[in-house]
Structures are given as C-alpha cells and as structure tokens.
Image (tube, rainbow, N blue to C red; front, side, top):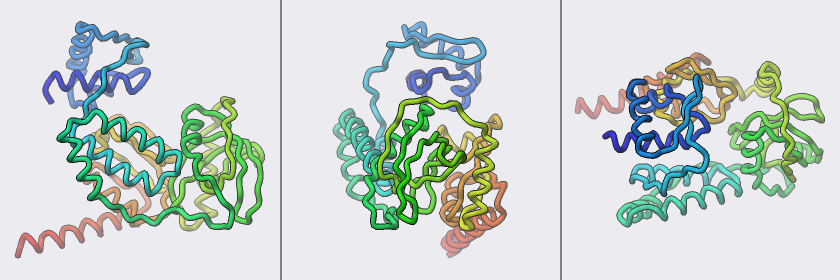
Length: 319
C-alpha cells in the first residue's frame, strides 16, 4: 500500500470510532508507532481536524466528513457475498437495511465494477436450511435491527414472547448479546420478570418495543453463570474457546461470542457451539492463525479435516 492510500485508509479508520488508539492503527496497517505519528501529523497538515486525548488516542473533530468513498472490486464483491448470507439467515428488518446499504455502495462504483458485481450477483448461490417457526403462531420476524440497536445502546426492551408451549408473556429485558445457533438468532438478556438471564429466540417474539430507558450493565459473573446453566440444560450446546491472532482476523470483528479477552496481539474468544463440523470448517479459513483451547473434539475435527484436505491434494500432486 502506497502512502497516499494508507493516509486515506487511516482517515477512514479514524471515522469508524469516537477515539482510535495509535496502537490499533499500527497493528492494522503493520507499521511502527513512529510512522503512525508521522502519518497523523501529515493528515493534520493537510487540513484534517484531528484531535487527541492523552492516553486514549486520536479522534476526528465533530462536523468533518469524508467525500463519498470509492470501493475496490474486491470490496464490492465481498458485499455481494455477504448479502447472499444475509438473505438466508437475517430477518426482514436486517435484510431491508442491508439491501439499502448495498444500493448505496453500487451507486458509487465505476461502470466496469458495476458490470462485475452484476455478473457475480447472478452466479452466487448459498444453500442453507432456513429458520422455521416451530408452532402455529405467526411471528413478524422483523425485530433484529431494533434488537441490535438496543444491545449497542444498552436500552431496555419490552417483549411479548411466545414460549414452546404457545404461551404468551410480557417481559422487560436488558439485552446482553445476540447469538446464532440451532438455526436461529437468540437474544440473551436479563429478564426482569424472571430476575435472571434468559434466552429469547428472535423468531418467537410477537411484539417488541424499545423503551429507550438505559440500564446499568450487570456483572459478567452472573452472565457466565447463565451460560454454564444453559450448557447443562442443552446437551447439544457447549462452549468452544479459541485464540485468534489479530493478523489472521485482518480487522474483521468476531460476532456471536459470549466473551472476548484482548491478549495484545491475540484475542481469546468463547462461542456457543451446537454444530461441531460447521465451527471446525469455519476455523480452517484462519489457518495457523487460530489456537483451539477447548473442546478437544473440536481440535480433533479440525485436524481430521486438515488431513482430508492434505490427502486429497497430495494425490493430485503425486499423480
């Protein structure tokens, strides 16, 4: 990456958060802190209003915005692929929001890129067993966008929730996180009615309202205890603990994790696992950039898949 491209990328990165640490910039772009300081100074000399907070990092002064960003072909292609996945596993609200964003991205592409995106769009198919409701109730299935907003802002949600027996109850909940397992999205939240953490399948929510009331974050200890109880009650669920090299993640966020611990140049993450083979195949894409702490059978399955791949391809080389 030449310096002009790097300066532009740093400027974009600075606009993704309220405050960005110099260490974070250095790690993402593989450069020294000294180079980060020099590049930020160059941006400031070019007229970009960048402020800094001692011990915290850099920030863009309110009111400054970049002109429309041009996407590369690879970036546009990745959004098309992501869109195919969104169609299969997201609810109506997320699909509509993503499609609106995708149209905006397409609108700023060059003509050559637009042709390539259209060709790719018509030649990608994802076969995935969709989510299905398990009773006769009709569910709106369009609350995920509001749920995500409440998780991000720590706002209390009011739910009309239908359990497996078809019984409807009204709950006030404090969202803790969103997880995808057993072919459905699940909202883990502190339920004020039950006075404890509970698991709410998003496709069993009949009505949802965001109260706008902000709650104080509860102890992580109680949330960990909830997950222990959840694993005990559901034999098909178990935790998987994996350490990722940040370089292997290449800036991509880890979603659907119950906990994340920053280890400097690595991240220790815990997942809710209900499909061993799916998780094993997903981890293969990170190559040597992952270390599986537990369970042993996940490590063994990844090793088996690696041996299968090696055997398959070495035969081609020998022949």
